[in-house]
Image 1 (cartoon, rainbow, N blue to C red):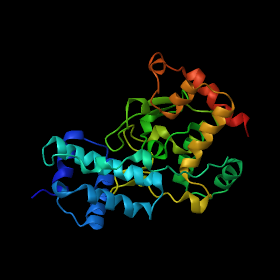
Image 2: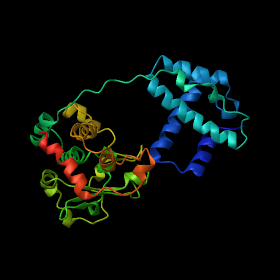
Image 3: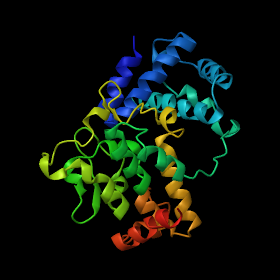
Image 4: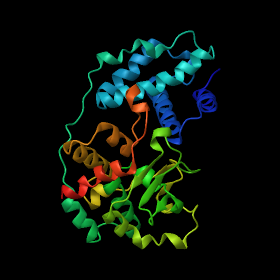
Length: 282
C-alpha cells in the first residue's frame, strides 16, 4: 500500500522544494483525502480527479482551482515516474477549459498610508519593514528575512540574498537594490552597527510552523492594505513613468521572459533613477 506521506517524502528528496511548496503539498494531499476518501495515491482514478475539480468549482475561484490541481498533478507525475501508477489521472483535467477569474486591481495611492505609519499605526519592528517594501517593491518575505549584513546604510544598498532561514526562489530574486534617502532615514533607528552581521533584522516575523517570513502581519486591519499592495504600487508607478521593463524586472526580481533579458545587467544608477519615481509621484 502506498501513502500520500510516502509520496510527499519522495518528492521532497527528489525536488528539494521551498518550505512553502512543501506546506502546499501537505494541504492539497490532506484535501484530496478529505474530498475523495482515497488514502493511497496509486489508487486515484480520473473520476477522483474530476470529483476534486468539481468540489473546488463550487468553493474557490477558478484561478485558485488551477493552482491546486497543478500541485496534485505534479505529485502524481513523480508517482508515474516511479511506476506507482501507469498514468497520471489528473491529466484528464484540461486547465484551458477552466476559465480564469481575477479581481480587477484598483490603483492605490500610499500617501495616506504613509501618514498612518508615521503616526504609529504599526508596531516599531513592522514600521521599518513597511518602509523597505514601500520603497523597494520587494516581497514582504524577502524583506522580513534580511540580516543586518544585508543593510549597507553607508553606501545606500540593500542586498536581497539567500540565508539559512530564508532561501530565495531562484537566482533572479538575489539582487542589490538602492536605498532612497527617505528609506535610509527610516532605517536609522535599526542601529545596524551594534548587531551581529548574521543576525536577522526581524526575528519575530518568522513563523516556525509555516517556515515563512512575514506571515500573518494583518496590516489590512491596521492600515487597510496588505503588504502586497506596496509591491503592486511600485510596479504600477514605475510602469506609469515608462521605466524599462528590464529595469523593473531587475528591481522586482522577475525572471526574464526572453533571451534578450538574459544578457547584460542593470546598473544601480538605473535602478535608483527608477525608484526615485516613487518620490516624484507623491
